[in-house]
Amino acid sequence: MVEELVAAGVTLASAGVVYLAAAARVVKQYERGVVFRLGKLRSQVRGPGFTMIVPGVDKLRKVNMQIVTMPVPAQEGITRDNVTVRVDAVVYFKVTSPAEAVVRVEDYRFAVSQMAQTSLRSIIGKSELDDLLSNREKLNQGLELMIDSPAVEWGVTIDRVDIKDVSLPETMKRSMARQAEADRERRARVINADAELQASKKLAEAAHQMADAPAALQLRLLQTVMAVAAEKNSTLVLPIPVELLRFLEKGAQVPGEVAGAQRAPSVESRAGSRAESRVVQEELPPLEPRLDLDPGGSISRQE
Image (cartoon, rainbow, N blue to C red; front, top):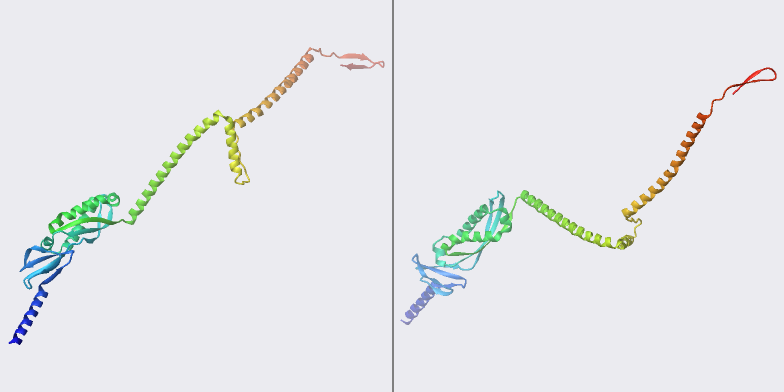
């Protein structure tokens, strides 16, 4: 009799251990447990720690409450300004209502992934290329709003959406590179022109100052000579003022005018002497022939 009681007790203890092992569940800190009893959802969500269910009657499903990082596959589309791009993104979301995440959607991860891909393609078609490259914060907010609207009904909240990379065709990359180069060249020319303008103003002020003190120009010339000579050059070029060249030109013209004035009277005197000789010759009477008788009785003609 005692042996039978001991055997029965051992059997009951074994059954209790088996039942306890089948009914015992452990929910981790970052998880929540959703219980279905005979296929019907229990309103109470099991929190973290040790919990019990009815074996064969209840079914416990654990839901992860951590933030999930889900990469969105690269989507190819055409922007509003007709540029073909390839964009990929990443979505950060978490489950806020475990019961709805289990009941309302079959697989909330897959649903969020498909919604993110569809929203990303829609954002590409509504945006321009410049917005995708430089105004990503606004696009991220719009994409987050598009994904979060249907995800709220699934018990999922979108924490953040970021566009990771925008791939452009090679032809578009070269065009953008040429545009950037032209813009930088334009800015460089504007800067050079501004520098020339400022330098011309300063030179004009310096010229006015040197005009009041002519010795300053000579000192500046000597400074330039010293700066050039310090480089140990074999050839030294000195600037000559234009006023000095004009002075030398005037000095060369004056002796020529004096010599011409001296030569002119001599020519006139020669012309006058020739005229006087002609007058004298015209005043002299012509010579008449004269006949002389030689002693020998011959006749000779003399003029």
